[in-house]
Image 1 (cartoon, one colour):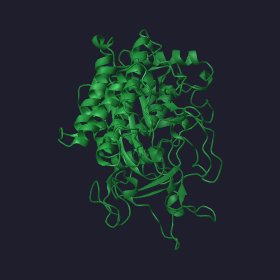
Image 2 (tube, rainbow, N blue to C red):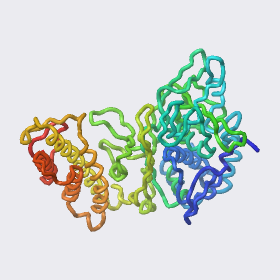
Image 3 (cartoon, one colour):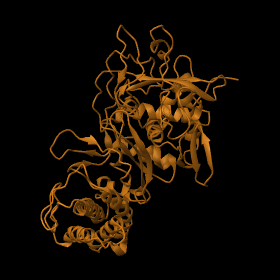
Image 4 (cartoon, rainbow, N blue to C red):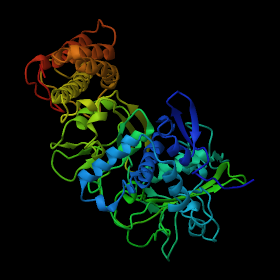
Length: 538
């Protein structure tokens, strides 16, 4: 028996082949068979998001033609040369098995892919055993429940998703522990953590992971080989090439937690080297499960600002630095399509990974999104994965730019109707429940007391709006006025939220006025409703 778990050859990554067969593969087999693999099937979306960045970095190392790789530093200032090389790689249709083996067996240190290596475990820091200790010098681990997203932590933690507590921790299978390790390094929390003592100071707080509360978007092909090649970001857009660029498993030494942070170079460090957490997993005697874990801070140095290649950047309306669009578990992926298809230049910039996609592939490319709805500190709400139909053929710089504009038009009007529906439902609740309210005058609404109808109406409206959106993009629906169908859906959602028609006169009057608020959108050029007040028709 052994406590080793070599990620190159252990079967830890769930995938689905083109023929529908589901299996698990290691890193080596994944790259050998990437042209046969249709999809990644990790059940933890934040882990899949982080793994894709790791796989993209490895792809840059091994993909090439005639001795030139996609991460060749000499191509850093020759974007046309780099794009030509990428097209040549795509034309090959698969990764060269010799290059794959050369990378995993010779170029990258062999031991660094072992999840439980004594000196350089994969993406971990073995020094935590001696640095995370209590006042008596005894090990002070964080607990295996702290590692696994969704498990309660602490002896008195709430039992929500399973009967786990720190008083009787349940080991996690090693493959799953690897998923959660990756997810923690990219999406981990800020604030209080297990103290780590290196000098005389013993800080017990850290910063959030580089992708915390964000949503990632990836061009998605019919096979994993094409998906991974397209995932390699262009040099210079997200970090510059550097001779010493290295992924954590390629570096000669462990990072200095108290020293300066290396520059965020392309492609290794920008994709894999921005973690703000340090971790260490403790295996069972046979290495088939993880029984304990340490999670703490890795650095307190300010991070270098760099553009992640897979996020939409939004600019605040009042001005300021762009920020990654946050994940929202209640927001469907189609509501972000215009930000992916339009050139940008306004308040949104599409991900860098969507620039300069090969025109020959656009009719087949879908969009895969991985999101983790979190706050900026400790609370996790939900994660999600979504995939669109082949929509990248509709880009504004494609052969039919009017479709991209149509996408934006329909999405914007759906948002406007959704906002007005939210307002109308709150207004109806106020008119029904507050006997002091004059039903014919302007009404001031308390944003802290929306009432139950607003949420219920939104839950009904947005699924209907999605179906309407896609119908308006179909060939037969592209000339249709988008206003009436969205407004009809909002009226139905409002009626459904309020419930069956009531004999109560106040409910009836409130319904009529709320419906008038929505019908006003049929007029040309509707103004957005105020957050606090409205007249009889707004």
